Length: 168
Length: 168
Image (spheres, each protein chain N blue to C red):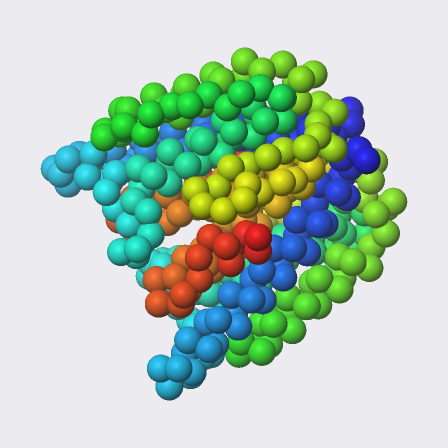
């Protein structure tokens, strides 16, 4: 067993997306127990100029989808950002899990030095080697949006703890 | 260039700890510009039952120190948790950077299947392969505590953004 670009990426994504599904279940149950609409979670923000929960989850999914596609040398699938319910967020997470499971490990392995070009909304695209893309961009981003989602639930009173975060 | 246990861990830690130092500089400047004591940051919490910023930074450092030591088959250095100022937190971060830089890559490489035993405050220790330890435990933990620190600064009004988080 040797670490590879696939083993250093996809299993982390799959596992943490599974954990995220569990947090959303707890968030939904929390809202229901207090008789408010669980979909209100989607609009929650840690600060007025931070993105709401719905975007945190969408971006976490997109970080992973983009990573797997780019490392595998495939076009990044483009998905609409139109979720407005917890159920729709769950569907996006599951779709992401299914997509990343569909790409053979062999297509991702060996991508350490592959040139990865990440477009930006403004300015020149960012260019990385495959390995720098994974460690400087994808992993920090992915965990950022997951942890921000977790923090929103935590601040909103959901009884999640470090065990839920890690799934251990 | 092939991904290795060292290349998949230490460069991420070093870079993100460097970013963390920059956020703390901005947090200190923010406090000074409003004429309050920057060391008050250390007590900030996202929720009453979440750990304060000082612990977030200590644990982020310890995640990294423990990872490098365990993967290298060394005893984990034990450091007191006694920081009470931003300057002392900076010193701990730099000490962590120095420690992880001091362990030769060759001692970490090849640790994918090494048995890693992580003690817990209560109950049986957790056991992982080296690679599972890195991807299921260390990376999620490390980024959790960094992002929580970032969120605390962000909620406290510090002008940090995604560029500061990523250091890109």
